[in-house]
Image 1 (cartoon, rainbow, N blue to C red):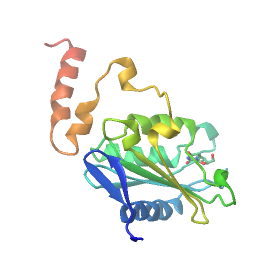
Image 2 (spheres, protein in one colour):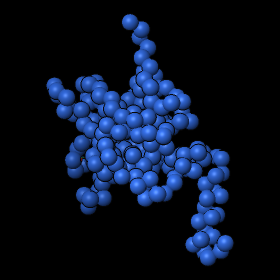
Image 3 (cartoon, helix red, strand yellow):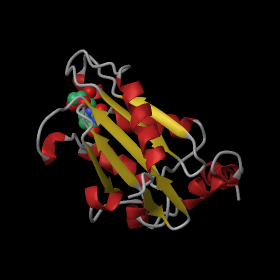
Image 4 (cartoon, rainbow, N blue to C red):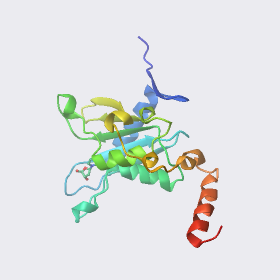
Length: 188
Ligand code: THU
């Protein structure tokens, strides 16, 4: 059996085992930087965009507990701040350990919704969600599997594809922004 496993993740691209391992490694790296004095539950996330860029996030908590931001949304914020809007795969790691299928921690509901908004590809099952626990137990699902019948931009009839197309530097967003500014400022 070949050592190299190739996993289909969208019609135009494939993510291989090496990339998956790298994402898990990057997620583990950032997990150690989590700010979690209250829960003491460290989470790390690393996502890869269609451009091949990797962004990391860790959870950071607050004395006002509700202000807590999860690792997944931290990674998405980092991606957006760098001018990219969609990702092809995300690895999420925690210090959960154990012996059955529930022993890998999966993203919370709020994060699933945020992740769904920023998936690359035409279909939600194009985007991989890789979960690994402290023992190295790994579960790989796709976005459709972890958030079926989801609500998204299309449910509102809003087309957000210009963000994905823009990637980093194409400037399409600038045109979109001009149109929006015109509307807001009453221009035409
Ligand atoms: N947490 C995440 O970072 N991601 C999740 O998907 C679940 C929960 C964080 C939030 C909080 O800091 C700690 O884990 C315990 O809930």
